[in-house]
Length: 205
Image 1 (cartoon, one colour):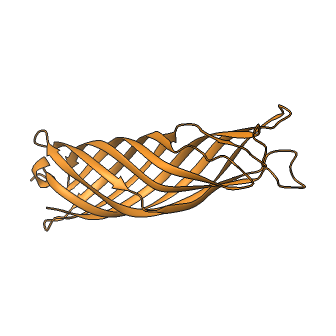
Image 2 (tube, one colour):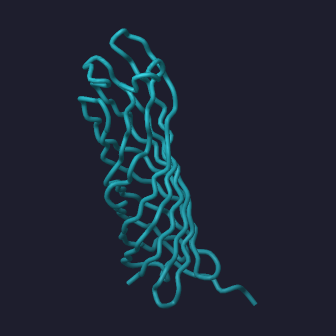
Image 3 (cartoon, helix red, strand yellow):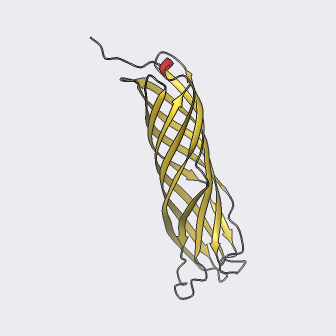
């Protein structure tokens, strides 16, 4: 006897899903003040998100298929980091809290079906998010884009319901915030790296 093996036809078609994520954010940053004094450090935090996603699975053979999808991470992800530059412990004038909102990403996921109606995949995508700085700051940070990598599994039932688990990372582009502490020549640069764990439940039509 041989084990039952799912084929690409079991996964092919349009699908929709709800998802939840836990994101761990690390930002390597540099603060430059008006006296040209530079301080460096790493700030970060946790950012849970939840949203929806949709896509299409294209069969490429008996067991291979390609997923093309879009995911929306919801609205305000909340505070992801607070920067506290050195030498500012007394006044906290340069402390800035960074918030992220509206995360979303496009991606492709080459997949191979395995036993028991399950598949494994790798994900490659492009992510984006909006940033907002809260504190004594006159400038606004630029919104950010980044490269996404992930690996995960999909398990599908005969009625079209499926369950995904995934882990991965997003390396975002650098952002800049000017006007720290109300001084136009003070600025912060940061390079955000996000690690995430992702679960989704959906339906394939």
